[in-house]
Amino acid sequence: MAAGGGHDTLIKHVLVVGGGTAGWLAACHLAKALRSADATGVRVTLVESADIPTIGVGEGTVPAIRKSLQHLGIDEADFIRECDATFKQSIKFVDWLHAPNRTSHAYHHVFDYPANNGLDLTPYWLMGGAGNASFVDAVSVQGQVCDAGLGPKVMTNRQYEGLTSYAYHLDAAKLAAFLTKHATSKLGVEHKLANVTDVVLVQDGSIQAVTTDACGDLEADLFVDCTGFSSLLLGQKMGVGFIDKRDTLFVDHAVAAQVPYASPDAPIPCHTISTAREAGWIWDIGLTERRGTGYVYAADYTDHDRAEAVLRDYLRESIGDAADEVATRRIPMRIGYREKFWEKNCVAIGMSQGFVEPLEATGLLVFDATARMLADQFPPTQAAMPLLAKRFNDRVRNAWDRVIDFIKLHYCLSKRDDTAFWRDNRDEAKLPEGLRENLALWRTQPPTVYDFPNKFDVFGIENYLYVLYGMGFETNMAPLEHRYTDTALAREDFGYVRQMADQMMGQLLPHRQLIDRIKQYGIQKV
Ligand code: FAD
Image 1 (spheres, rainbow, N blue to C red):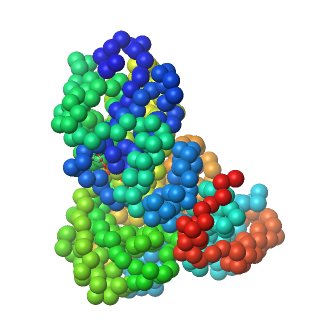
Image 2 (cartoon, rainbow, N blue to C red):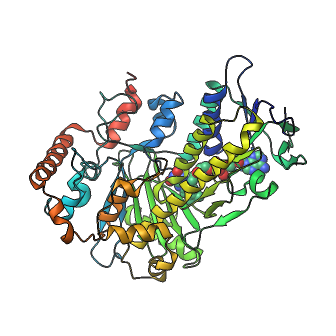
Image 3 (cartoon, helix red, strand yellow):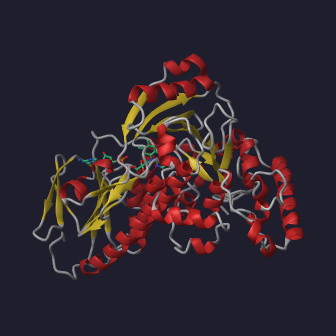
């Protein structure tokens, strides 16, 4: 029964429009939660165009993806084999603090929580308790594991478990194909290939059907708009406005390139490398068969030709003159989010919902989390929709605002002075208010869990600690020193982290070798 029926009408059919990663993730979560073998469940159909390509980028993830893949019943080794996937344990930020003509600077934002044996080590590190060790090396083994090129798990670890926490790097196109197969063969999602040419609204503004060239009108009770930046249903047809966030986050373009390895057995970094440049930053991600790279830049501060030259200069450092031959693709990006994400009987998941630069791999993270939220709180009837929609809108908006705070943090802590792009990024007037307040507070005391009250926030205290102190943020500990008297215990804990690091160096395999073995032998399930 399509929209416009009585308010107690059961929701029996969901139509997902768009077959990029967001569309397939949404279809998988919905089908997993709502389908049933008999007629009592909810049907899930996905329609996608064979002519309009997916965005084709999006190679970095965060550890939450492991839970989702496991929840969806995906075999980890199959996923690694079919998506050209590798492990990711950190993002290494290079030259974010100073321009590269000064001392080169780098730090890891790792996925393991800071060691906390009942004692928060942060104040002790700030008071010099770990000597010259960087924050990340004082409280975690993972930066050292990454720098040694080691993977996060041993072959006796079960699926989705490791000695350290991890996410993946993956081929975006292969992930969409892999999820297509899983959704249709294991979760019962119906798949249609057609171009949506129009959207039919009823009088109250709800969607009745989408009109397609190859499958006629497709009706449903709830529509999920996964049409990417075009936001065909929610944005274009229902007229839900877009809140542009380029006043805070300046970068709005990318130039991307796929780069071959120098040799088939070249080491694969187990972290994303994010290198700051004059008007943005370059991502460098190692998959099994190739690297994925791209320069994400602000068009107001540079031009497209210069941006491409910056990327080629970067590539020349690793592949020499072959950098001149690499094919590049320019991608304009819409930075911000919709005024609402759920309007009437239409929910946007994916870039139709919102997007910010991929500095912390927040795309898949937010889309996966919001698809799961929709599936877990799915309205049984149309009458249940408005209240759920209101809550969904509040939570998703908050999630995007917190993501924006965290991304901006990376820029406003920089001391780079080489271009207007970096200087303007420090402009206090362009900082979100919550972030400005937090920074003022954290100059007088280290962050605490009380600064992160929302359980559903995408980034928590540990993420902030790694970035703040990786970037040399200064907290004035002098007036607080008398509060921290567990110095001996802290010294012991710092020693324990060093000992664990030594132990893991002997235990973990080089990253490529680990991937090769997993491809050959699989990963044990129990
Ligand atoms: P798309 O991939 O654009 O898919 C849109 C779908 O809608 C397609 O199937 C298309 O055929 C269909 N469609 C559109 N119009 C119609 C129509 N009229 N009829 C029928 N079908 C239609 N995310 C991360 O998590 N990590 C990263 O490292 C990362 N890096 C990124 C780098 C860049 C430069 C960019 C731009 C994005 C990056 N992202 C990253 C985001 C990531 O790419 C997206 O989150 C992800 O691919 C989901 O995209 P999507 O499915 O919303 O849209």
